[in-house]
Length: 335
Image 1 (tube, rainbow, N blue to C red):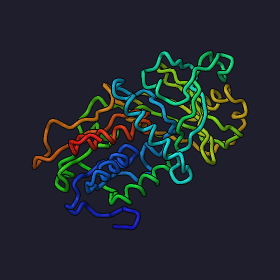
Image 2 (cartoon, rainbow, N blue to C red):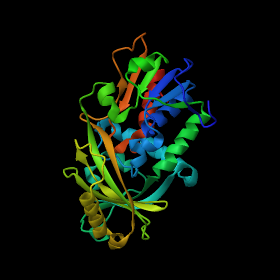
Image 3 (cartoon, helix red, strand yellow):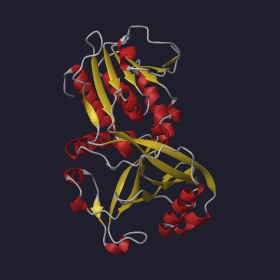
Image 4 (cartoon, rainbow, N blue to C red):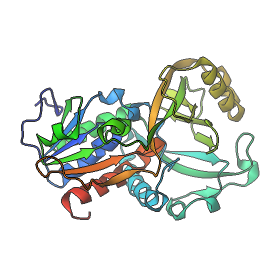
């Protein structure tokens, strides 16, 4: 095994659990399992930089995710972790940054919102841009390339190995470990045979930051176009789109121009910012919400299969809460 916890071969039969997928959902699940004393191996078809997680704008907020009854607790559990990680933003990539959710009212949110420290309704004259309502908060904003590296390093400290390997089926993983955890994201359509999974295309524009130090979002659940900007080290991320069923990974210039125009309505200085690049990712959304459960059918040899996928655009927001649930399902012990 290399010093950074990354291996090149197949599992050697000494793992208790194989986690399929090395995005934020897979790595947090692996960490929680390893913290319970299990020997964990992660199989990933893509490098961390090639996962959907790496493209995410990554503001903590339960955005377009179900089931509502569980999302609040998962989100708040993750919020507590990010608040701790924000003490060392250079290493973890997590910062607490102020901002505004426009077109949002506190009364329209679940009980979880009342447990978010500092979340408050703004008077109309304090809401930026052409919006009449908004919430202000200081929330975790995650620089995903840095954070994924931190997750990999934390996993390695716990003895987790990460191997680049495309998985043809869960039986393949079951030959190397008694328990398999499915964190394959959109890949679970084929691996788990789940027709409820669908891609939701998100396009971003990266620009030089003209001095913006707060985040902003305005997301209409009924529209495929959203408006947001997130200040990250060395860049400002502009968004976005939420195009259901679209799987084209090529950035569209017309879409990019509309993204810049919408963000410029809120902060005019964005209009003249130099474009650094474009990003497209496919969010793994699922009709019926996140699947976080033990599969009723045992694997070959009697092993256990646990699913943890379908997080849509809120994988970062619920990652640690869902990972806690995975650890409970695998070990039978609540944290």
